[in-house]
Image 1 (cartoon, rainbow, N blue to C red):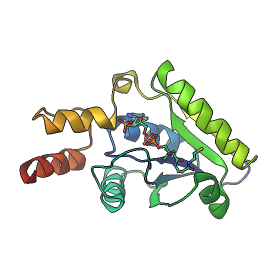
Image 2 (image 1 turned 45 degrees about the horizontal axis):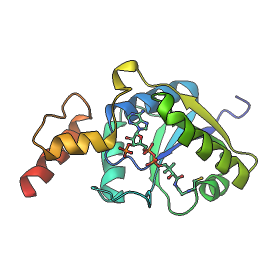
Image 3 (image 1 turned 120 degrees about the horizontal axis):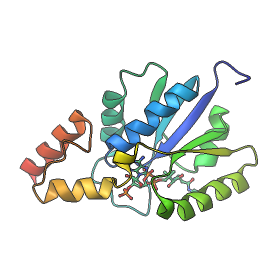
Image 4 (image 1 turned 90 degrees about the horizontal axis):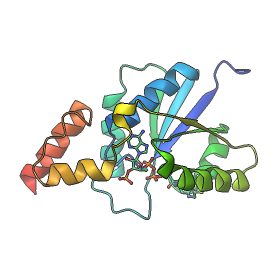
Length: 164
Ligand code: COA
């Protein structure tokens, strides 16, 4: 790594963060001097948790990792990367089925800004079946989410269930 202060960016909607996301963040924190987890709205999805709530849940979940920072951003990811002068993106690949969407995203981001490189990390195989939508569905139908999400997310899902 040429620059010791170098930061790689892990973007996503994280609605909610799962153990799979935390696994990728932990792996990235071992590889790069700094990791910025960048939370945003995915306008194709109806989010259960607000941007502020998702940032809070991620901050709580990664507080043991000193080189990881959680932020939110609006607008194009490519513009956000230019703004903070960081051009390495991290994305997780759980299965072949993720590949097509991720390939498109990586090439589109590179089209928007030629400097952007996307690095794919594979989560632990225990998490290859996990997704945020599944976790929300399990919680909504009264199932236990303890094994799939950090404790603060489980607590939040349970309190939402009681309110709803
Ligand atoms: N473990 C568990 N689940 C994982 C995972 C992992 N390691 N990696 C991905 N997922 C799941 C997520 O839970 C999520 O599941 P869901 O579809 O059920 O919600 C899904 O894979 C993808 O979510 P995420 O990684 O959070 O990304 P996203 O697809 O919601 O958002 C952005 C992608 C935010 C990077 C993209 O929308 C973006 O860049 N937005 C900004 C606007 C922009 O620049 N658009 C143009 C892009 S070219």
